[in-house]
Length: 366
Image 1 (tube, rainbow, N blue to C red):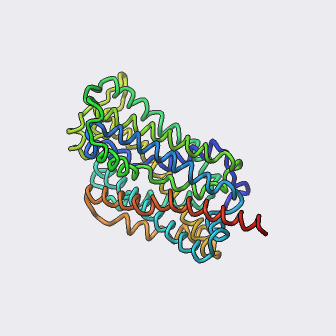
Image 2 (image 1 turned 45 degrees about the vertical axis):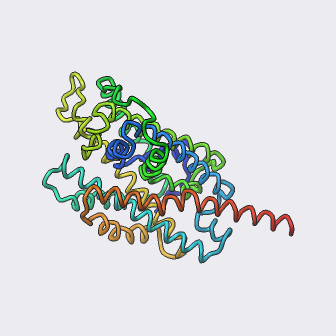
Image 3 (image 1 turned 60 degrees about the vertical axis):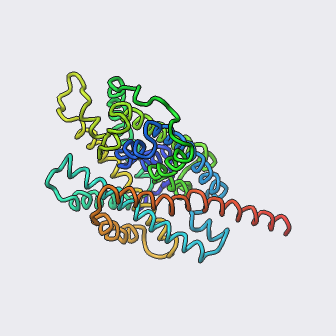
């Protein structure tokens, strides 16, 4: 059952959006940036972050004028009920696919670092059940949990990267702008897959107690995540050099294993960092279940929220259990972003703007 007061503050909304965007993709990000743009990988990521902040502003602004309408009801009013239903089903499919990918990556990494010998399916299966249970409790519950885990996730990781930054060889980032502009642009587009989860801005606005502030809050949250990703990428590239970073599977985890904190009783810092990432993956899994259930319930207009949460569990588990290598992970993540991501971040908000403008003109003529 949902809480009687299922509204959250703008600050809670920002915290949840930051956690939802931040995921296991950050572990692969420096390697991808180095492989795509060499020592200019951090510049490509900077461009990506600015573009994503613009997309965030576009999405939040498009739906801000209809604070009392859910995403599906808004589309039904502006375009048509059948078109809204089709878009809703596509959005639910995108949420299931993104959640399955995050769980698959988490299961593989946890199997190699935290729980060696434990089948990945068991790892992400447990995470799936916990995330589904939390998703059944409503959005206010998500916000309260987010406030608790936010500092637990980010403060220790920020501290470790600051320490790693002191040991990094920043000359590895010179010279800058050696990458041709065309390649830099392609790299920036490819790195957009790291911002998976930003589309939640299209679905979360009815739960915010002050929807008028959501555009600015969404853009600021996106820039905050972008700044964190930029710092992680720059420190990693400076520590290993672009060539070594591109060759390593998980350079971020390798870097954390090299960090030494005087007086620390923890021998392996990489395992400690992964334990913080567990909370992040839990939040992302929870978000995927929650929003897919909200969309599907609005599409079919029957059943309870819990029914649609449970309906997604076997689909996500089956998709997570598919075995594929790291190269296929990149391809799948890029495909999701290039299709569903671009569609819901840019095309759908543009359609909402256009349909709303036509509707206003018709109302004025009448």
